[in-house]
Structures are given as structure tokens and as C-alpha cells.
Image (cartoon, rainbow, N blue to C red; front, side, top):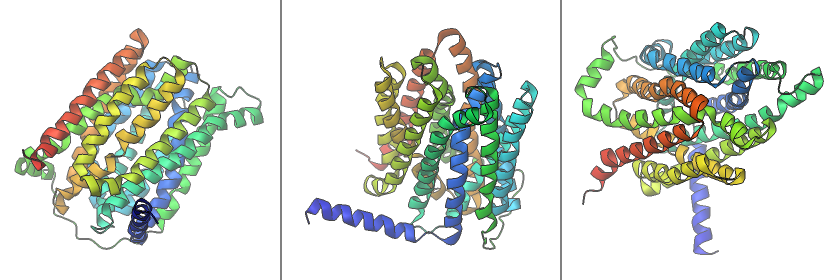
Length: 417
């Protein structure tokens, strides 16, 4: 066996060994991730088309994303308290129930008011899940396998979303044929969303099977986040600011990628669904490959390198003259940009005290949702008047800035000249 092949075999065995170290609760959580991820893959693809099929425009889509993320921003800190008060298991279950309920409401009562109300509920559920996830994974993993668990769970989620994207691309066609309606009608899209709401409910079963250890609840008051921020203002600022800048850029483009490919290249739903499926699969591969790369390069080094390399592909994605070239850029960009997300989450959780994890997770969630709360509305307005070029330019500039901040705050200090 050649040295290269031997090294590959060692790496695979090392990776498999880390996966075998996952604890029972972590394994059950991964089952939940697979089922819920597939359901959300369908939802993310179809929801925008459902809203447009009801006669609404991109400006309303931007408003819905904004109210969703603004809600997540507002309730992030209360969600952190709820995650401690309810416990990790109950928090995840409540989040799953509210998510399914909100999707059902969007379909059954598709008025402007109910769409906003359901998106508020969706934002609450997603905020609770977001602030619970990182502390849950920290509490149910050891140091040796922790980075692998964070990345593998994200990778599985992306892979299952890939399956959901494939299904979402063809499911309205199946329903349209069965019911004798246009596959691009609100009836076909609505029935698709109702079915995936039922699938999302099934993801609660592995959560119900979890046996949570009794953990002492840290003493918390309503002033705990303020107290922690007063003690560690510089650290919190450095941990949060790059994510805030990234979120502002992401909110300009990411919620509208399916609309971009339909309008810019006149692609049908099955083609967009297939593209999103390949994109989720590319993200999954990148996320699963991230832990050994982080061990070799370092966590923050991987964050900076992967995000910097993604920027040229973002430029190509937005301004490619041919659809196939934009597709290639999209696949490479999503793999590079997203592979570092769980690595950075691990990096953040390891740098704060255990008693502060829920608080910091809440603050990180707030920073991410801040950009998504406002950028989609701005982007929707720009799209209606000027097309996609201005949002893409702004996103490119903001991603470049955030990468520079990661380098300045963490890499430069760890590699002094």
C-alpha cells in the first residue's frame, strides 16, 4: 500500500472511531436531524413558490423572512432561559411541535396576516432550537469527538435536506397529476407543505426516547446576559461581530436563491429542486470533511480559509453568463462557506464557561438573526426595482469584511509575526 493510501485509510479509521464514540442521546438527536432536515428541505424549496402562487410578490417574501428572523432575534435571550428551564429535551420537542403547527397554519389560512403570524411562530420555534442545539451537543459529547459531532450533525442535516430538495422538486408534480391541477398551482404547493408538516412531526419520536442526565441548573437571573457581557465585553464582541456581518450579507441573497434561478435563468421547479439537492449534498460533504481539516489546520484557520475561498465563487454565482457556470459556482460556494459553521460553533462554545453557554448561544443566535431580520426586506425592495445585481454586490462586500474580521480577531493573534 502506498503512503498516500495508507494515510487515507488511517484518516477513515480515525473518523469512524470518533463516530463510534457518539453517546446514545447524540445518536437519537442525529435521527431527529435526518427526518426534520428532509422535511425542511422540501419546505425551504417550496414555500417561496407557494407564496408567489397565491398572488403575492417578492417584497412580501422579504417581509416574511424579515418577521421570521426579527422574531428569532427578539426571543433569542428568552429562548436561552426557556432552554435552561425546560431542559434540552423538552426544548427540542416544543420547537418541533411549533414548527409543524406554523407550517400547517401557513397553508390552511394563506392570508397576509396569517402568513406573518405563522412566520412569527416559526421564528420562535427556530430560535428555541438554535439556542438549545449547541449546549445540548456540548453536554452530550466528550472533548475527543465533540468537533466531529457538531460537524457530522450539520452534515447529516444538509444531506437530508438534499433528499428533501429532490423530493420537493418533483412532489408538486406528483400531487398535481393525482389531483388534476397545475403542478405550479397553490393547491399542489399547499398539499406538499401539509405532507411535510406531518413528516416533521415524526422527527419528534427520537427526541421522546432520549434519557437526559440530571444536570445542575446554573443560577440565572434576567440580568445574566448583561452581567456576562460586562465581564467579557471584548470576547463577546469578537465572537459575535463577524457572524453579524455575515448574516447581513446572507440575508440579502440566501432566502431568494430559488427565485434567482427561476428569474435569471428561467429554470423550472424540478431543475431548481435538483440544484438545491446537489447544493445540500455539497454542504453535507463539506461539513463531514471539516473536522479532520480543522484538526490539521486549526479551527479558526479553517473558518478563514474556507470563507475566503468561497468569495470568488459567490461573484461567479451572481454574474455568470451561463446557467451551468452559475450552478458550478453555487455548489462550490455553499460547500466552502458552510463547512466552517459547526467548527466555529464549537470554537465559540469552548471559549466560554459552561454556565454561560446558553447565554452565549442566545447572543450568537441574535447576531445571526439580526441580519436576516432586516436584509431580506431591503433585498426584496432592490430586486423589484433593480434586479439581483445590487444584493449580490452588497453580499460580496460584507462576506469579504467578515472574513477579514475573523482573521484580525483570532488568526492574527494566534500567529504573531
